[in-house]
Every structure is written in structure tokens, then in C-alpha cells.
Image 1 (cartoon, chains in turn green, purple):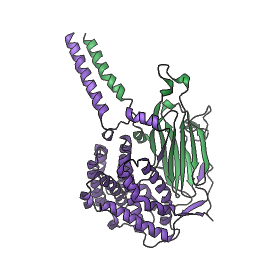
Image 2 (spheres, rainbow over the protein chains, first blue to last red; image 1 turned 120 degrees about the vertical axis):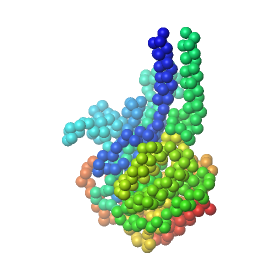
Image 3 (cartoon, rainbow over the protein chains, first blue to last red; image 1 turned 90 degrees about the vertical axis):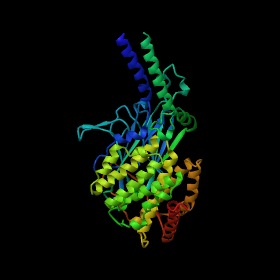
Image 4 (tube, chains in turn green, brown; image 1 turned 90 degrees about the horizontal axis):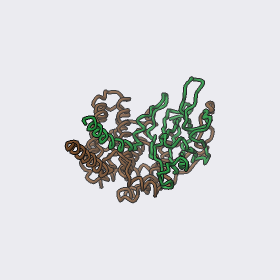
Length: 181
Length: 299
């Protein structure tokens, strides 16, 4: 009887904890990111709540005199099924157009999946270095794919279902090597 | 058996009460953005979402810290002015202004001034309901600041970023918009007041000219929240400033070689740069002073 009581109490305490644990506090996920010297954390970094089947744009001003390093992170719920495009608004050029992951996930092929770097003999999360020859804005377009029908639990009404997670745009910067203030 | 049911009933009551209280919390005071109303709005109204990113005051000052930035305490908003700010809009705008002043004084390793501005920011944070940002960890760091520029700067920039993160987490977009606007206005006001004489092509003038991109982001960001009267008033106050920035032209970059030694670097920015004439600089300096003083004097 005592064991039953104990189990029920545990269950009742556990249920609400599980419910509240679903909360998404994306901005706080930036706390987990640390700049890699000589780069510094840039406080334009952003972690936002995103849904499957939707498009997100981040308009990021880059100032001449600094080098910028961008990397991206996404919640596992998206299965890395995300397309990343970056447009340089000053020149109008598309400077990056890559998926979250590819089959091989080699260096330069994808945005989210780590690759093995032979030079340093370890896995590296992809990052992209930008050098502004003059101040500009980057438009980062992130398209999160819809959930495929066969992945959707049959108990759910498929058209209404949206998975939710966080996508982080992690920005680091350092004084530019070539020119600067 | 009866006692078991009593326990179950009591626990159920406690759990449900906690559940209802949590769901009923105002988003302003909650760290949780997993809110059904918000989600429905998010799902049905927003097919694509744009985030306009605005640099912090510290981010702006960092460009000129090693160069032309001089220390001029007189340009800052005196901490004694804090008592003038009664309504929420003025408090939030001036919170941004004081945050910029804090970033400026800590750039110069001014310990006592930094503590004064930090205390002002903390007091105002209490009045606008974001005192939770200053948790034990942050307060401990502030109390232990030694006379060290890096520590001062790190703590002040971490405080600013914590505030931004807190406001985003608690979905207080309008408060954040006003704070960010106040911070940007003060940064530009301080920088324009550090320049005695306009020097064409100088780094600081170029930095001010490049703010055209930030103004564009700032105005778009405010526009996303213009249904709020306080934001609309702020947009109206910034209209002339926006016009000045829109009048800035472009110039082809000549004679500047871009090193492409690192093949993994992506060169962006094209071949044009924004230019600001002396006349435009003077107009900017006058207009930013007008806008800023209206906020700090609460007139």
C-alpha cells in the first residue's frame, strides 16, 4: 500500500513537471554558445522560436572594420530539414544557399551538421566567415520544411500540426585583419 | 484507503492550482513563451517572420574605442534625471539611454561612474518590471567588479544582453523596441558630440554614415509594433532623423584592395559605400540632439 501511495505521489508530481518542461525559451539558448578566440560574441546573435513549414528572415547589419563568423543551430525536432540562404543587400548577390544537412555532410556542403576536419582531427560545427568590404546588410532567409505526411502521428490532424523548436543564429566578430578603424 | 484518496485529492488540487496560476500569468512576468494564445497567433497570422537586428551601444562604441572616442561626461544624461521619468514610455526609452551611457563610461574604465549608471539602470529596471534580470549571479559580478576595463565592459555588455534576452523570452517586444531605440539614440548622440569638426571620410563620420543601415532596421522593427501608441509616438519623433539618413548617397569604393588570401571568407558589401556630407552631418547632429533631449528632459 505504501509503495502504491508513493508511486501515485511521484506520478502526480511528475506529470506537471513534464508538461511545463515543454516550454521553449529560445533566447536563453544563446547562453550555451561561447565565442572561439580570436572571435568575440556578437550580441546581434539571436535564437528564435520557429515552426515547421514557415520562413524566417533575419536582417543583419554588418559594419566595415570587423570580420564576422556566422553559425547556425536548430532543435532536433526539425531534423535539419531547413534551407539557409544569405543575400548581401548591398550588392544584391546571393552569397550562401545550403541545406541543413546533406548525405555526405562534407565541409561547405551544409549548415547544421558537423563535419570531420582532418587538419585538427575532430568534428567541427560549420561556420561561415564574412568580410564586409563596405558596411552592408545580410538578409538571412531560413525556410523550415513542413513535416512530411508519413512522419506525422496518425492521431494528429495533419494540416493543423506544426512542430516547434528553436533556431539560433550565432554571430561572432573580431577586428578585421586588412582594414579597420 | 480513505487516506490515500485524501492525499490524491490534495495533490490533484495543488497540481491543478499551480497549472491554472501558471497559465494565467501575464506574459510580461513570465519567462515562458510557450503560450497557447501566442502560438495560435504565431501559427495563423505569421506565415513568415522577419527579425530586424539592432546593434547594442557597446557594439557601436567598440568601433571607436581605440580611436577617436574621447571621454566627455557632460554629454551623458545625468543620473539625477531619473526622477523625472514617470510614464512607462519615458522610463523605457531612458532605460536604453542610461544603458548606452553605462556602456560609454565603462569603455573608459570609469569605475565610480559605471557603478552610478549601473545602479540607475537597476533602479529603472525595477520600475519597468525587469529587475529579475539582475539575478544573484549578475549582482555578485557587479559587486565584485575591480578596476579593470575588461571586467567592467564584460559585465555591462552582459547586463544589456541579459535584458534583451529577458524581454525576448517574456515576449515584451514593445518594451524591447523602446529600450533598443533609446540605446541607439544615445549612442549616436554621444558620438556626434565627440566630433568638433567634420572631417570628410574620417572613420567616425563613416561609422555614423553606416548607421543608415541600422536606422532602416530600427524603423522597420518599430513599424512591426506600431499598433502601440508609445511606439507610434516614437516613430513620429524619429521621422526627421529617418529623412536625413535616407538622403545619404553612395560612392564607389576606389583604390582599396580587398585581400582575398583566405578563400573561405565570403566578401560582402559590394563596391559602394554610404557617404555623409558636412551638411548632412550637421543636420544629423542637430536632429539627434533634439530627439534625445526631448526624451531625457521628458518634455
